Image 1 (cartoon, one colour):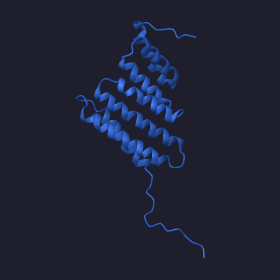
Image 2 (image 1 turned 180 degrees about the vertical axis):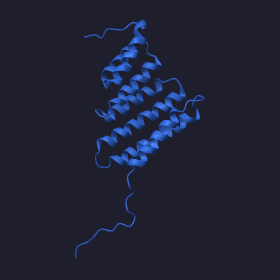
Image 3 (image 1 turned 45 degrees about the horizontal axis):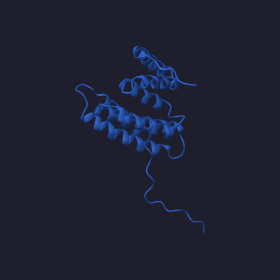
Image 4 (image 1 turned 30 degrees about the vertical axis):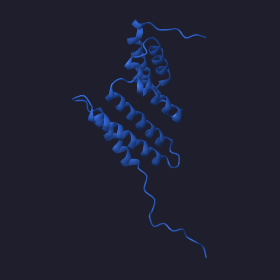
Length: 164
């Protein structure tokens, strides 16, 4: 079946509906709406960002593939600050999803993703618009996440116990 295109006039209402679906924890529906908007208006920045967020909302279902799909959208974000900020969001959400999975070694992997997110947030902070502290707030969230979940380092003087 062929998809039906939406009209340019319907884009604002469609984007509001996509946001509503994200808030209702239905990121798949939000993603679908964003794709429809981008078919009609490929450069719509609000749709690109909403699509990226919808994809990262689904990381628990498709971790590696979702990160790749979200990162593929970054070049479509035209503002340098937003591109760096949302690169950080992808990494931070990847870290949080890793922690929620709770697999062995997940805290260490999550810490690496957190540190990458913090690097992106620092880049965004340097070029942020006056009065925009979003990147600082996200950086602080990562610091707190690391403080709660950073893995303990391995003992330095470990020697295996040998039975006689």
